[in-house]
Image 1 (cartoon, one colour):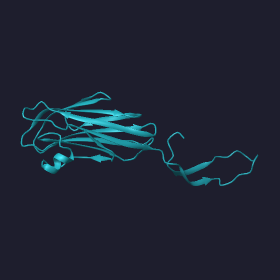
Image 2: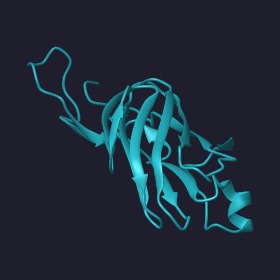
Image 3: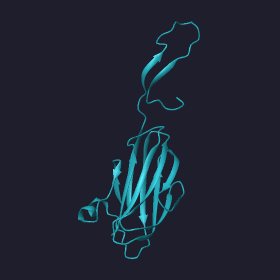
Image 4: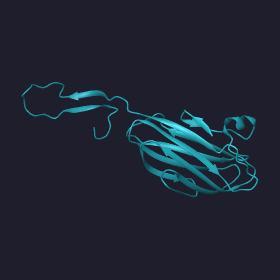
Length: 178
């Protein structure tokens, strides 16, 4: 496998440079990305895995398995073709991927604690003549909780023991429910 510590890991075209950059097989490449990176606690992030067929013929029975670790809520699982099942691992049966085309799995996650959300994605196919030599990618995305920044406070002052009042606070990086 290949470990990636940035938000995007990918493979290039089918040549010697691509072989060094993460070639999955003699016809398939896999790329994984997460946006935004870093993710922000309480805000949705998108995790995308793309399988691209660089070969000269279709690849059949293509299956992607993605295992996620970390603390999050899985909001949605959307394959570009085929079907997916499970929560972790998530298994997608893409079926046939034609030459020069791709299949994509898009996950929407809601991070629920700070730390790291990691994934390992692996692709397999039953197509004869396809030799899979490096079929997985690992990706880690940091989840941060930036400090809140107040830009407005009203009333700006009050007298101790005075009448009841409503305090209005505006700013950025507040978490829902805080």
